Length: 137
View 1: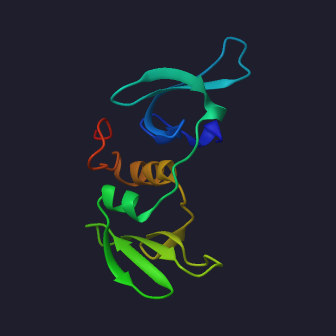
View 2: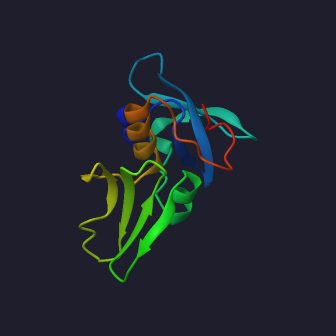
């Protein structure tokens, strides 16, 4: 993962478990980046290059307050209570229309941390992931 894409409270995967990033820092020599990650059980620091992004899935969309509003052979659409935010899952192999839609504009967004960062920039707060501890603000 590119450490420049990360921010505090992003959800990431490490060794098949989900963690919140609580700190991002460089080693004493300023060469390598590390992240402090935590969940309900663990809290520790790891090299930033060892964490993985979490792919957006239908399950994750529902955790972030989206509801399925449309389904066809080509596309599945999810919408949030804010009528101007949608997420399309393109069932076509070319994935032309897949991604986040805000006011009708398409934004390439395949991973949870990308959605969190976009949502935070737009609304000044983190999206709530229902059923996950430590993601509310």
